[in-house]
Amino acid sequence: MKSAVIVFPGSNCDRDAYVAIRDVLGSEPEMAWHGDSSLEKKDLIIVPGGFSYGDYLRCGSMAANSPLMKEVIKQANEGTKIIGICNGFQILTETGLLPGTLMRNKGLKFICRQIHMRVENNTTSFTRKYADKQVIQVPVAHNEGNYVVEDDVLKSLQDNDQVAFRYCDESGTVNDDTNPNGATDNIAGVLNKNKNILALMPHPERALSKLFGSDDGRGVFESLMG
Image 1 (cartoon, one colour):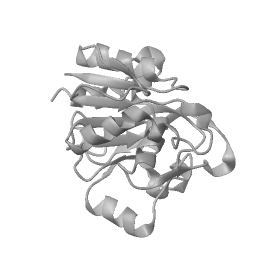
Image 2 (cartoon, rainbow, N blue to C red; image 1 turned 180 degrees about the vertical axis):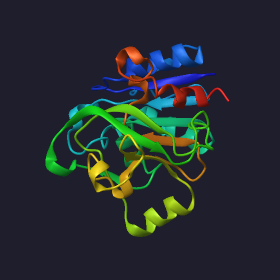
Image 3 (cartoon, one colour; image 1 turned 90 degrees about the horizontal axis):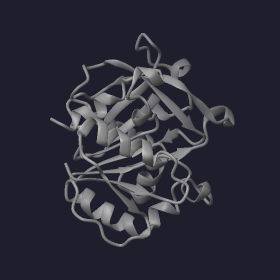
C-alpha cells in the first residue's frame, strides 16, 4: 500500500502514524512535508494529530491552507483513503472535505485520558475488522474536540451512515454522561459521503499494543488491509 503522513509544524503524532502503518500494514509511508506542492498518488493519506501552527487563529485553519493540502484534497476527491486524527480532523473540516467544525470542549478544559467509543458503522474500509456496536478503548488528547453540526447536517450524517464512532461507556451506553467533550450526538468519528474519508478525535495510532493500555486501535489499520 502506498501511503503518506502529512507533517506540519506542530505535528506531534506523525511518528505514531508512521509506526502504525509500518507495523500493521507492513509498509513504510512517505513523510510528506506540508510545504511541498506535489505528492505521488497514494492509496492512503493520514493527516495526523498535534498542534499545527500552534493552533493559532483557529485549530486547523492555517494547516488547511498549506500547499500540500491542495493535493490531499485532489486525491481525496479521486477516491484515495484519508484518515484525519485529532488535529487532522480539525484540518479536514477546515478544508471542507467533511462537514461541521470542532469547538472548545465542554468545561473548557484539555482532555487527556482513555475513553470508550462504540463502532456505529462497521462496513467501511476503516472499520470492517470491528463488530457492529463493538466498544473499543482508545486515548484522547484534545482541547477542541466538541464536534458541532447543524440539525440538517446531523440528519444527513445519520441517514447516510456517516457516523463511524460515538463516545460511550464501557458497556456501550451513549448519553450526555459518556460524552467527554460535548460533541453533537456523541460523535467521535465521522465519514464523508463516499466513505473514503474518516476523521476522528480519539487516537487509534496510540492504541496498538496492550503495553500502552489498549490495542483496540489496530482494527482501524487492519481494516485497510481488506
